[in-house]
Length: 266
Image (cartoon, rainbow, N blue to C red):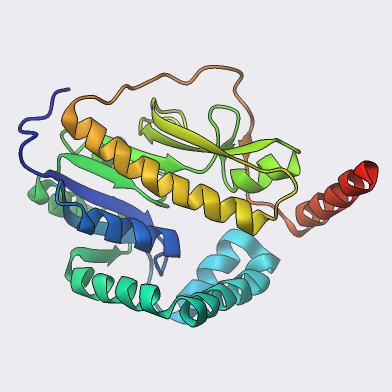
C-alpha cells in the first residue's frame, strides 16, 4: 500500500503493556520523538496500575518464583545506568516527562474507549513494543497496519524469551525481527531482520547488542513503510516450537550446559 503523502511525517501509535515501561521501550519512544519524519501520536499500554506493587504482581504472574531475582536485577540495572550514565538517563527521563500526556496506561487495551481513542488519532502505522497479543480490531486500525518487534529469528524462534532459548540451544547467533502483525503469533511478514553473535558471551552482552540493533531496525522499517520501499517477505523454513518463559530449572540446565561446553573446549 502506497503512503498517502510521504512528504509529511508518518503518524504512529505504540502499543505496549506492563505497569512500567521497560528501558528499551522508553528508548524506542524517545527515538520516535527525535525523528522529524515521524509524528508520535501516543502510546497505549495495558496495565492495572503503575505502582511498585503492580510491578511485583505482574512479575509474579508471569514468572512465578523468579519474580524476586528479576525485580532485584531490574533495580540493580536501573541503579547502574543512573550511576554510570547519569546524563543519558536524565535526558531520557526528561524526554519521557515531556511526552507523558501522550502515554496512556489502560486496564484493557481492547476496550471500546481505547479503540475510539486510537481511531480518533488517525494513525498511519501502529507499533508494538512488548504489548499483549493484539486483536485485529486494534492492530488493523492504522491505515498501513501494525509492525511489531520480536527478539528472535522467525519462524524458528517464536514465543517468549527467545534470546535465552537460542543461547540455551547452543546457537551461534541470536536474531531480531521486525514484522507486520497478522492474526498469527510471531507469524507476520518480515520487514527487517538482523542477528548478533553469541559465542561465549554473557546473556547480558548479547541482549544489549540485540536490543540496540532492534531499535535501529525498527526505525528503518517505519521509514521504509512510509517511503513505500518496504519489502514484506513471508517467513520461510522449518517452523520452530512456541517457546515459553524459562523456569528456574531451565536456567540451571543452561548454566550446566555452558559449563560442559567450556570444559569440552578446554
